[in-house]
Length: 357
Image (tube, rainbow, N blue to C red; front, side, top):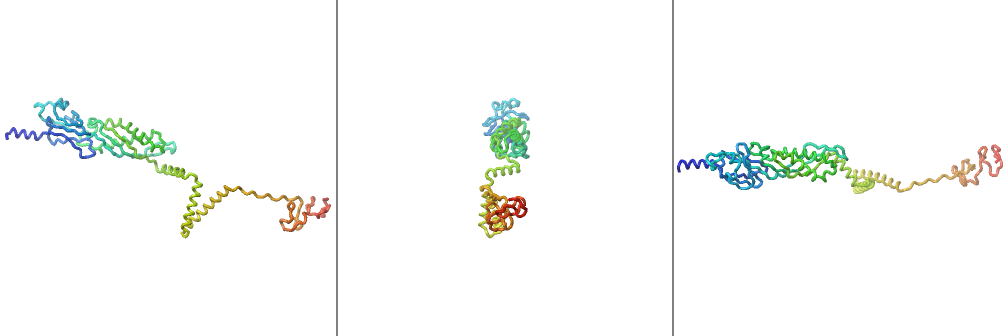
């Protein structure tokens, strides 16, 4: 082997003839192809797989962009690079360039949530604080813009490098959507899809300058403060119970039945006593509601001037016995209109004062 052949082999060993990248991770956004000190040979084969874009950068300036497919790096397939490079020895000579592979697939199941409660005014509960969480998906919509604005000069960019910015932008937009929607707190669960669509439409224009786009937003839950949830639970329970009087009667009857099954236990005895008292009160209330009040009989009219012959107590008209002493009355004695003393039946004058009868 001659010296020229040895030099040729050495030069060929420093040239790259196949350029490709297979993503072994699930979170890589941009990967810079490792030249390992070598240079790209004109006529090299470039393979770009689906959900990938290859970008050639010449001396810091973006030259050619390749979508999925297989390419032979020649003057016809590299118009910008050919224009930028001035090779003295023809197009078979190697050239220097950086190659970046951009992952354009969707990155799914990314978590989001409100770090702080969102204040909103509700017509029913007033000012309340709500929290929300869910998942979202995004992709690189413009590889060239993303490479310029986000990637910079790093060797690799992952999802974790950009999801913080995306998440904060999403939460901010969704918080505004919830606050401005004026949807009552009780109706938020029925409008998850509408709020998600609104968030995507509102957020994508803000993410476009970064070359990123949201592909889906899912709201899993919007939670209310604990005190509001307790109030809702009480209101729901009252609606389910319906008639509180009937419910109370049912509860008392159940308590009596429970106490009857454990008659020897002190707890059962106490429960039975309390339930019995409650049942008694309810039964009395029901009895009073269902029964008309008993009218007391009016006292018998007292005959004017009629007195007992034994004790002198006033007697009702037609009384045969005295209500005070029980003496049988032969006939009611008349009283003197002047002094009020009893008179003898058939007397024409009062024996006490002489008043004419």
